[in-house]
Length: 364
Image (cartoon, rainbow, N blue to C red; front, side, top):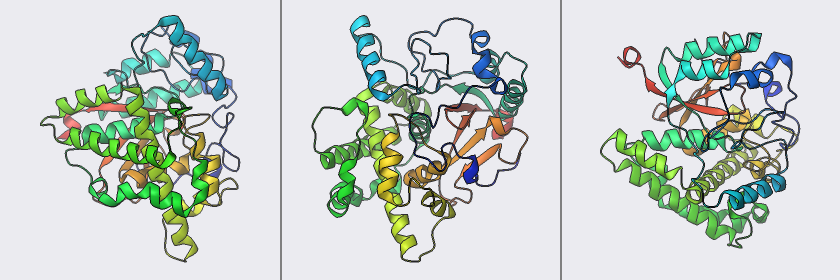
């Protein structure tokens, strides 16, 4: 399969409207397959700790989170569950690996056209990867899957993280752009009253510290175990997402200013600021980045911004696009040659899982 061209604006979820509770809440139709077959596709109730996927309307497993409800309702339910269960084992952000075709058979048992397409897509992916790790679906899944892959695979601390200037970004940008104070911290940090600049700086420092610690480990197995542990620590994990979102905003500001000055910019940034809801970085923050983790995830064009923020090429198997030129999409489409590559799987451009274990014949 060849790499697809850049997804067009008409194909982005929520293109032309603010990303809110309904952006990822597409109506369920018989053609979608998995949504209408979910009762048949599950062998039993969701086990505690199962990360789940971005849920479909009409089904919510014990541990899954419903993107069709507002954030206050979700937060109240989380608090109720904690009270009912006490200090139970935390949810897994990234589930243990399982055979990729076993996962496909479990999730897609129906015979709709969509189910058949998904099976074909998974068969294609299985030619390169033997296993899959399911990513928790709570509107952070694009950030979670990308960052987990990038950090667990790195053997050297990225140059952009070594740069000391990165720690000056929060104070510098907040002092220059007062609207950044509208930043909406994740649910984990609501009510803590911490200064925004201090919180972002703390998150960036944590990102650097944890990434450096992983790269110092001798073997891939050690890195994997340590990364699994990191993504089980909810407070640290969600701090990492605040850092990455801020890096995305910083990159957006840079690209917008360059565009305004007539400088050449990547084509995706032209599209990013062509939307009615993100005509400038302030609107991007209010209508999009602030919604991530609350009422929506990343849209397609924002996957490019994520790639530029962490200096990684994000290659996605878009299973719903099987047998089209968009089946394998890279963000960006023409990346710098020195950027590492992380690979994800998306069934519907809203939820991302992680393929692992490159087939021996493929690696050779």
